[in-house]
Image 1: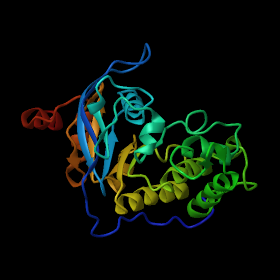
Image 2: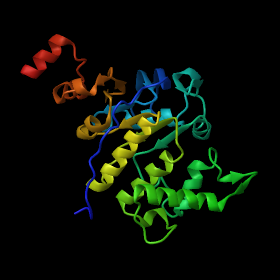
Image 3: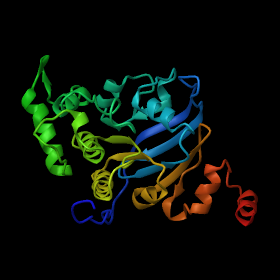
Image 4: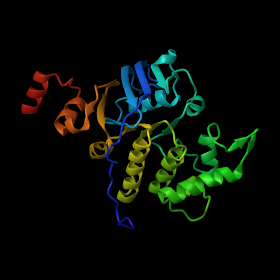
Length: 280
């Protein structure tokens, strides 16, 4: 069905956490559109070597949080988002990339890539500020193609020719390219939304393993996903988004489906409330 053996996803033993690389301090943000969700007092700390999973039903503020972390939406208070010890809430996407951050949005075509641009051109769009693709104002075409070649080889991206348009790739192969493009920059912080949405089992395994390997190398990885099995497989801690609020993260071994279900329904997991809900 997937054209080959599906490799087992496995975290390296003895993975260690380091210093906080992504910190969010009391982030509140009004919705950017009429039907958007207001973010309310979101705070968390993500260390190097750690994967934090964010679960929740779609439409509870996950997109707004991604926009606030990536720099698509700016905060009046620079200290609400701290990347590598630098207040970044007021910084643009490009400036945050220069600090060592990388971002993979949920929508592959139109957000993660420009559909009618070649893969090398798409690599340039996100990598021009924090790589060797541009030198003294001139594009290094060989460097953009090298990024495509590395992503193709490392993440097994299947395509008809060396540098096709993004829209010509299947969903799974395009997702592997987008994730690979960002991971191969060796970011200090990676924020990824729905990393395996709509891809086959083989591609999903490749992407999940790459996220684990990046964390093992010392990066701080934030994964938003509606797939609880995916988060249980790769995350060290799991928090839940509900109506623009983020729950306190739970260690994955303690994040049972019952607890996550309560949080996704708006429960604060107070002992009495949780016991009553589970018994209902």
